[in-house]
Image 1 (cartoon, rainbow, N blue to C red):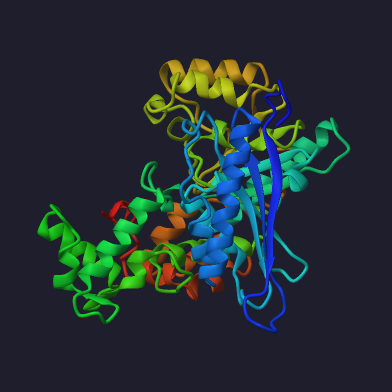
Image 2: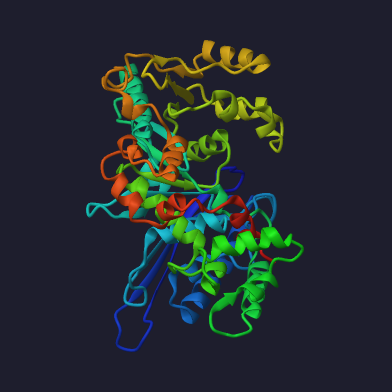
Length: 463
């Protein structure tokens, strides 16, 4: 950090070593961001991180475990450690010590444990997704982002982001092609703030291991009940049924949720979402951002060109998604400050895709009610919110005789899957239906037992 500079810093940390005698080299490379206010604090944190990396590589060969404990002994909250923190937004494992590493799961660990707020994954030449360094990937590029949990992605998701791209290109303000990025929100899979500290995580792992009195790697119903604390018996039984998928035991790995294993409930759910979304072949930002202004602030670190949030379609509700004051209750300054941060740069905008009803009629999104409607009208009048007219809607999507596949979003598709109807396949992009059917997510939905928020809270808050 330069003296008298408030600029956040970045850097690379790497370790090359020989895991076994006569074996080829193995390498771990990290890209870090540093927001500590002084060079001294940055140096101290880098020293701790380097020590952790050496110790972990000497002691472990599981890349997901190594990733999980890189920030051991360090602050991972922005409001601690002198007002800043180290954030790791890229990790690469290479060499014989690390075979079969899935970069998607490494990225998941970074977000799940709040080691990073955002991680970018891009498709490689082989079609497989790999991590990208945000600085390089986003540098001097306009960005269009669509946000969702994509359970599952629909044809409407693709139409919304492509319509936004057509609109932005028509403005001709830059000769650089916009990056079209899907923001896969996994905040429901992310540990709550305060529970990601190493000491607490180890204590929870010990509690799970102690519950396995038979030492067989499985928890019976009786063993599981020792972990449920003061939970009502009926709720605890329902939770056991979900985690055991209707069986008579739960894998300890499914609760520890820290290795790469297919037994990890949260990791499996994440991979299901990723593989459904990958069929669209867009770059993906993984994040735990709950609000749009948080995402825009993250992207603004790396590009000064326009950032567009594309919303709408598939039953999208402006009131619920953007103009609900209650959803900003935990934000300092509430909804007005959030919008102020979102539109801090006049080039940052929201493009709203029109609604398509069940008969195929295309019309503007319904406006918010009450005072929020006045706020919406003001933001539209100054160009911060831009409704997408028919000129930017795809030819097929705006034709009532042909747009049936664009009339429903993820929630409607999920309801159709649950009901046993095969009609849902018409509403998802080519290739997505086959991927959906081959994954655990589809089996849970068709059986009427999708993972509930109670399961996520239990796994992430387990004491």
